[in-house]
Length: 147
Image (cartoon, rainbow, N blue to C red; front, top):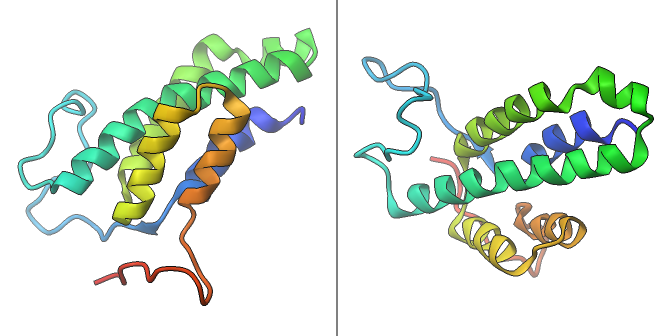
């Protein structure tokens, strides 16, 4: 558990993620602008706007959870090396950027929304977010295939 903080944030993106987005089209923006993150792109669907809103809320919350866990499990020397005041905002920003890049189904976005609304404590929130993993198997509803 001592190395949970860096791994937690990277794992949360991977565990909650769907398929990757295709590369930007020629002539389109190559990278997302951090200054316009709050303004949805005009070509975004309602699902993409909902995903982005959930990502914006999840980033700080998951960072807060990871920081709280680090404070409980790490020594003062380890915490000093980690420098949460500097690294936490960077991890939050990186999580949000990567989260917004995901192709999520409407079910996955809904899981994000419900988890954020219903779970206030960290452990139940993370457990709830496990439900956003792509479903596989005979009883699972079919996920929309990549186009």
